[in-house]
Image 1 (spheres, rainbow, N blue to C red):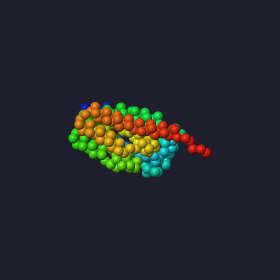
Image 2 (cartoon, one colour):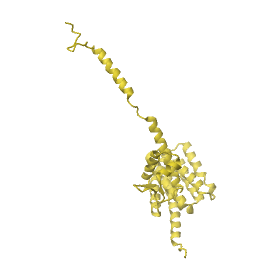
Image 3 (tube, one colour):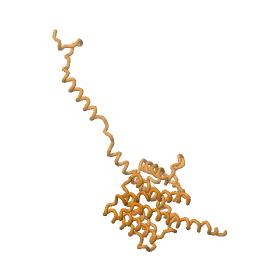
Image 4 (cartoon, rainbow, N blue to C red):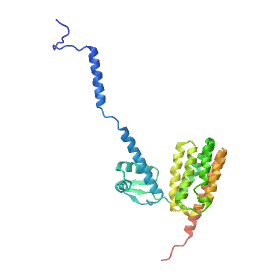
Length: 263
């Protein structure tokens, strides 16, 4: 009797052919499996980042006022964005303390107060002084020159200027200083604190805006960084933020002493 037959009467497939068939089957199955939507994921992340930057800027510049309720649908229409990027952007802004997401009520822009801004300034002294110290230790000649340029531009040469111009120059200087430090964690923390301060420029700090003083203080920081003097750079940052704190305190005290208008 021929041994090529099985008990069922069919031919036995050689082992080599069976292995080849399994490989083909696996290839077909792998090809049929849906591939991870990498491009879609990257696009979604990009849209979320755009929505985050746009909403944040409107909060910082008081397009959206402290205490104002925001509607996600209205934000989507305003920004021309989908609900998912807007929702994810708002979640990120909540982590940074700029909004609060209230279930079944909506999203409210966080209303900072005087005590809060003092805490922010105190935190900035600690964080930015360390960044300045590190920046002085790691600064290249090119970076140091760029920081010195940013210290002298955008402030109207010490003359009065509008808040938008002032804040753009201030943000550029502090962002460059943080970048030069080479510490991404501290850099991002400092950026969040500084942006919280920016909103106060529009709310109250414009009354304390002294372009000549700020330009001089920024120059002192940049010069210490250029010299590689970490301790000197840290002290210059501390003096800069303490100067702002003192000016803000004077304005707040004057406001509290001001008599209420008679009815």
